Length: 197
Image 1 (cartoon, rainbow, N blue to C red):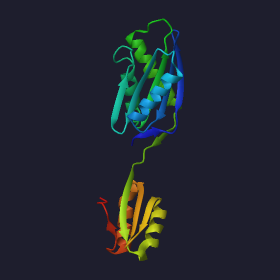
Image 2 (cartoon, rainbow, N blue to C red):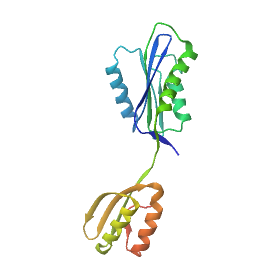
Image 3 (cartoon, rainbow, N blue to C red):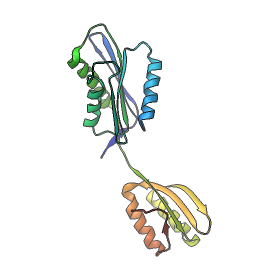
Image 4 (tube, rainbow, N blue to C red):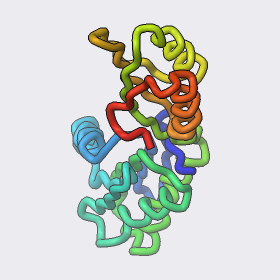
């Protein structure tokens, strides 16, 4: 099961006078990751590089930001993949210390910064949410509300018209049991507005 992080975690390495400030943090998507990187550049205008790697929603990115190709972003991304993470951005800010590290040294520094931060990170399972819509006769409104409450569904909207329409979300693993209970309780009087399967 993929995991994300509960909160940002930082690390710092000093290697041959170069300073590497690493961070791993939860993000929703690439645009949020790019905003974080832009903010880091604003906060660290004298940095030599702000390299980053992203795994979010099936998308990935590996940015070397001027370091030799494949020595920063890709090793950082490999560390994230090895941990089975999703919705996570890894960034490493480098302040160059005047001594070249070579390709192998850069790979170890960037991957090590991310790995060190991940050692301290709290990982949380990603629970996929499903949004469902249904309509029921007024007589069943109370029963549906109780079932949603017992299941822990997030009731997003209730509309009263000819019937009562519910829009709610819940973890995907709880979807099928709830649908079955509601269908049984409603004895065929519940209408699913989109296919709940």
